[in-house]
Length: 464
Ligand SMILES: *Cc1c(COP(=O)(O)O)cnc(C)c1O
Image 1 (cartoon, rainbow, N blue to C red):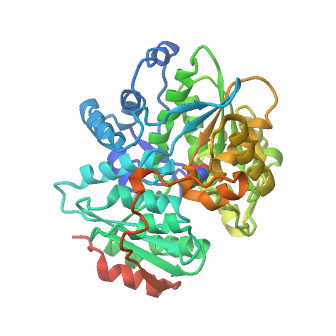
Image 2 (cartoon, rainbow, N blue to C red; image 1 turned 135 degrees about the horizontal axis):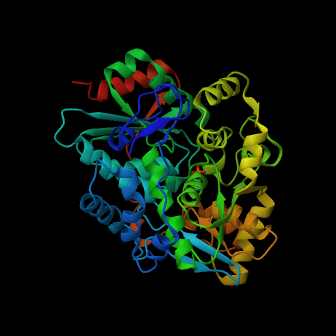
């Protein structure tokens, strides 16, 4: 499989290089050159498969030419063997129409483990035996950082530098990062907010001298391999509920549009998806874009769902590329306009194309809290605030199609907000049991380019 950039002007890469790369050189994001697809019979034949077997079927076309099926199977067995539930991503029924797809049984309690446990193993495999050393740099509002650190700790050939905004992540989130003491893990608390941390990371990737010195890589959801791994659970869940004979809708709590784009990919590959509900909090750029064509970013309002407090949804570009007839030149011009003015209008073709599969809803803090309380009273399920945004959007959907809401975090990861809404304080699961006794290690650094890039340059391995 070959991968091309959404802006049409970057080298075509194979699966290995697209995994190790971050952004494409032209500023775009990589997508597969043709979308692979499954026939109805091929989907029906996945009915009895385990999660790992399903993962191998779904990902094999994307990794073809770089990994054979036996290798892919070994990697998936190792990655998903670390999950605390034998179904990896179990479905839980709420009532006759609604289900939760629990994606939080990985080591760090959020759905990002599903992709990053595999990506960590892919990095190690692609770097083993080479003299190359990878320097992963990321900014996190909490969940990506803990999942990436768990996945990369102690792996050969890679260092990870994770920036988090000082004092703005939850205690559980911070400790999941800072108590990992492997020598290749470097936690940096930035004296600034998440947007500042993110801007510093982007500046390091763009700095010619810095990126010439170190082989930089990204683990946020612009990384294609992450999205690929997330396609699996859409098929796994829908097949369990009767696909391909029965059409299923999904409601997806959304920030960077990564998770819900994976649902789009599942539909492109032949899964009969009735609809994808894009559920946002009050930071609603995606809801405005899908309902009125207005894609314009303002300032972030902090909410109880910090992983969705986003004003620019990077992966939306991948959808716009598909909805513009894959015209990279036109999309590059449209995105340049957005980067200059922080606003753009979707074209009619983009709006109509999106309306064929996507709907959207904006859920405020009250409606989110009510959804937590209602899930607890109605079916005894304690859900996290991000999941509650998805469930509230699902319940607002008219019709009778079965809807699967993606449960993206374990309620204990956000237990203060959950307790406020339901009166129940969820216990941390045993797999993170002594988190609050473990030693923490991180450095606090000023939010300037020189301070952060200097800190990293002192500790990273230069290119050979
Ligand atoms: C990252 C995250 C999201 C948003 O996912 P995107 O792929 O950015 O849309 C939702 N919920 C939780 C708990 C997350 O960690």
